[in-house]
Amino acid sequence: MKKHQWIATLLSLVCTGLGMFYIGTPGMIIGGTLLMAFQGAALFIFFMTLGFLGLIIGPLVIGLHIIGLIIPVIYFNYRSPKKPMFDEKRKRQFASPWKIVLRTVIGLALFAGSIYAGYTWGSAPFMKTAAEKREVQEAAESYLEQKYNEPFKVTDVDYTWAIGSYNLKAHPVQSPELEFTLSSNEASPPSISNDTYLNLLWGQQLRDRLKPLLAELYPDQAFANAYVNSDIDTIERDYNQLANTDGNISQNISLIVFADLTADNLAQEKERVLELIRRLPSVTVPGETDLHIEYYGADLKTPDRVKKLEQDFDMKGKQSTHIFREFDITKITSTDDIEIRGLE
Image 1: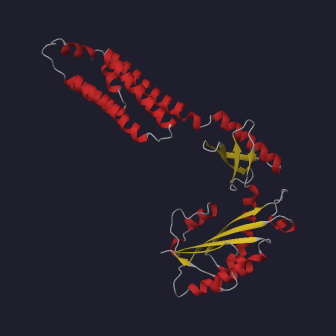
Image 2: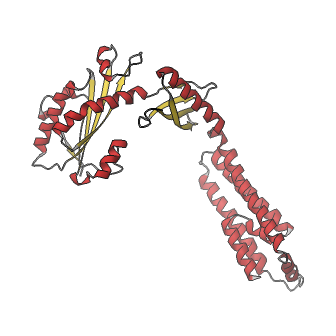
Image 3: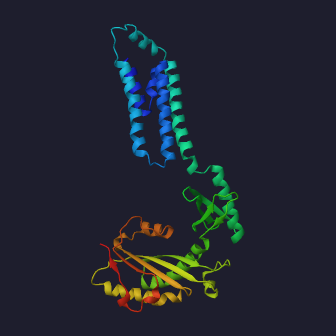
């Protein structure tokens, strides 16, 4: 009997009320079913209230779980001289292994069903089905192909219930490394908007134009990323041709520089930044240019990190030592205008 007590206790620890199904008396099965149903209902209410009742529901769920654990313990330890046949009935209850397995499996299925139902029904108003997401994905791919006359692949569809819209990620089939974002509403058919394909394509071309200049000023030290904005209405893929358009152009250039800046070489670094700013107009199109430079210790430049930076412009939590930021480089006329702030 001790073995059955330990098994029932373990099952109750894992799943609320499952130990009661293991015992298998009609009262235990009814009680276990109720506990599981209450657990599913609590999960449903938690999602429907966006977690605001978590401080109430959390202790309630824990309490239900503890009740489901205590009842089997009481059952196995209960002794009554007034009911001498109780122990015999308890032994007969565990005489058939296949019945024990059957009712335990049924209990496990009911527990899983209650949790699934609580989660599914509770979160349904805030989520979209796979079919709805697929409709948005197909609409986005069709929209992009018609707009740019080349095939695209949408790789991620994320629904934000608070504003009733989708955020998507996509890339050209021929250039999977050029991943960009776009949006969709939840109408049927969906309305696609705000794609950043050209912004990143122009940025990629600007980054390539920057490489010779950076190689000269920051040999083996600097890595660049760029993002270009334009309000032109026509589809222009060539960054250089933006100079011939009437739209407003703004470009953001971000650099990661591996250099050990100290008080002794800070003035020299300001001179280098000034030279970079003076020569940037030779590689950028006319328009406002925002320059952002983050400095990291030279020891952080490893072959593995360089490879990762070329794929994803992110230092992954590493702390920069200094930073420079100017939202409009035309305001910089001398080193006196340059402030490189230390962050350590």
